Image 1: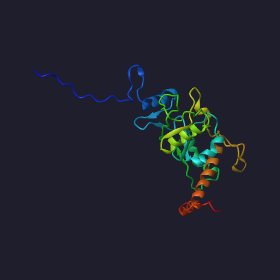
Image 2 (image 1 turned 45 degrees about the horizontal axis):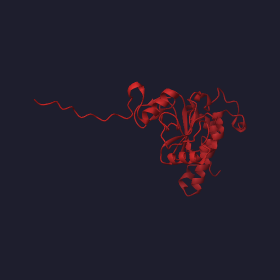
Image 3 (image 1 turned 180 degrees about the vertical axis):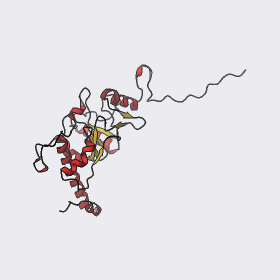
Image 4 (image 1 turned 30 degrees about the vertical axis):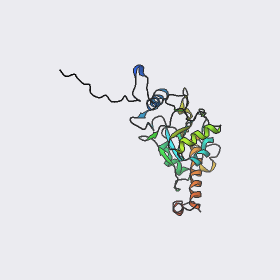
Length: 239
C-alpha cells in the first residue's frame, strides 16, 4: 500500500495578509498605510504605485528647480524625491489646468522639463517614512512631516536613497491631517494679470511660475555647458 505524498507547497507570499488582518511584508504594509491610513488609492501589482487624479495630481520637475519652489508650498504639502527629479503634489485637477496656466503666465512658448501626472496616471509610491507601517530600518529616520530634513544624517539618507532610484518622501503626508487642504490649487477665477501676479497670485500660480522659471534656467545652464540642441529648443533663451 503506497502512502500519499503531499504535493510541494509554494512558499508563503511575504506580502500576503495573515490571520487577524495583519500584513507580513513591507509592500503590503505600505499599501495598507496608503489605502487605509491616508485613503489614497493604489494600483495592483509591484512596484507599489499610487493612482493620481483622484486625491492629488503631481508636478514632476528637476530637483534643482523644485527646491526653489518649496517656499511656495504650505507646511503640510507633501513632496517626494526620485533620483534627480522632485515630485510636488498639487490639488486634483491641476494637471488639466497646467497648459492654460503656462500660456497665461507666458511660459507656453518655452520648452520646459516639466511633467504632470493627472487622471489615469500613476506615481511610484515613495517608501513610507520611518515610524509608519511599511517603513524600512535605515531609511530617512529624521524626516519630519511637513518639513525638509534639517539634520545631515536625514538629508544624506534621503539623498542616498533617491540617487539609488528609490522614491522617498522629502515632506511626507501627515496622518490625521486633511492633505488635500494643503495642496496648491487654482481659485475659481484668477484675479490678477501676469504683470501684477507677484505677492497676490494663488498658490498654484506662484508654484508653476516659480518652477517654470527655474526649469528654464536649468535648461539654459545645460545648453551653455555644451548641449547646443537645447538652445534650438529654447525660443526665448537668448532673446
